[in-house]
Image (cartoon, rainbow, N blue to C red; front, side, top):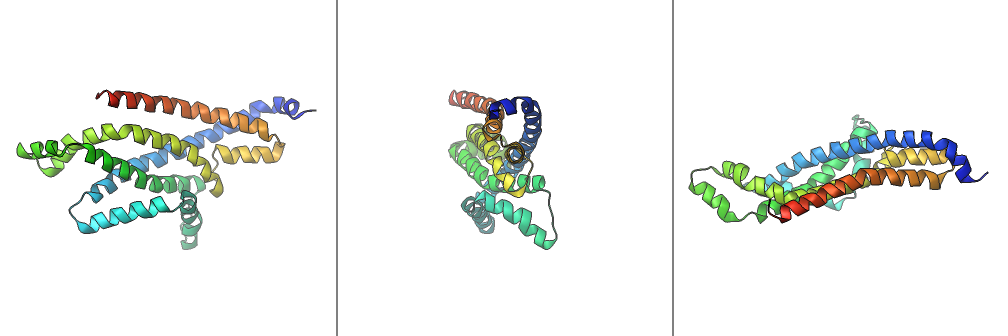
Length: 221
């Protein structure tokens, strides 16, 4: 009996297991992206602060987290914190690890978006009586976020694919589950093809949405 003949009766159960794991993949992606979106904005503001200490702290954070592989960061969070009595589940550790790593990248995206807004707009806001925080919140930031949306979307797509690294800490995402199924069935080609189809089904809508954002921002909407 060929591998394909053996695989046919197992495909429904394999597909069900991988789809369940795909939900975990989406949870990691959504949770990490939410952390990165919020903390990235905080770090971007710190880098533009008048406080030299805040600027130094933000720049140090960005450099450290961008220069250390995300896999190393996951190991530190999952295994390292356990040495101090703080034991996180693989899913929680993956969300926190990817979120903290993504914060460094999104902080740079936010910063470049803010820098792209002409300084004259903030100066005009100050001239009509706005405070600096008001000018940033109501005038500069909306334009900066619009400019930053396409690269943020591209980061989200990359995060969805990179979440497979979480299998190294036993997070039950799709690649981890696929490996477990292959170890049981020895149907590597069939399982990987199904996994590829699921990744495409998750990534293609995101990719299409990013292209729409790029088109809209390119037209100045």
